Amino acid sequence: MSGPECCKNPPVVSSGDQCGQVEQIASLSSYVSGNSDLKTAVILVSDVYGYGAPKLRKFADKVASAGYYVVVPDLLHGDPATSETNLQDWVVNHRPEQTVEYVKPVIQALKKKGMSKIGAAGFCWGAKAVVELAKEADIIQVSALLHPSFVTLDDIKGVKVSIAILGGELDIYSPPALINEFEAALDAKPEVDHFVKIYPGMSHGWAIRYNDDDAAEVKCAEEACQDVVDWFSRYLKRNHSAL
Image (tube, rainbow, N blue to C red; front, side):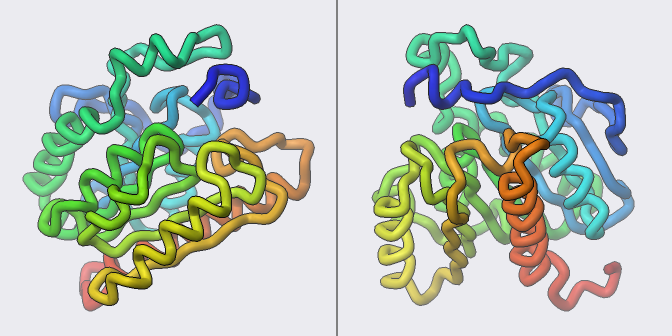
């Protein structure tokens, strides 16, 4: 995961058109969006740019509008990467596989709030934390990885929770060949429902770092968000009278 490509098109400053707000959840600052009285929640785990990235928050708002309480925790503890960051040094202090231990208290806090069903989606760096959660059968009900980094074939073989994997045709960190290997491993696990999709012409980070002036990127980003909503709805809204 080299700096130049992963830090391509860093997030811009927010325009202030967000629907949610920042709250403390399990000691972490978190962007939250949606109705906290709902019984279903979705946790979004950011890429290296952290929970403040405007398009990640826009993604969160869209998911919330589908009927979920969405939480984007600051799992980087105020130290997101920038376009000048040396990621090889940065990741030493932000190992994604360790991040799962920060996510679990957030999940417990949501359960205490009455959330009975919880899904998690991770982007790039954050996909590794989500796949670690998906290796345990009783933490979350459904998962999704979008343009994942650090995720290995062995990780996928260990998944116990229904999972969606969304990749880009031009992504050098999770290229189609690797995504196809992931899919083959999941095909060999009939007990784990899965959805795999490769978006044509998309590079790494496209789901939340798309170019607003590129109609194809905008379309694929919107499609990815809807695909996540549809996938989660199969597990979080099933037989749930509150929704």
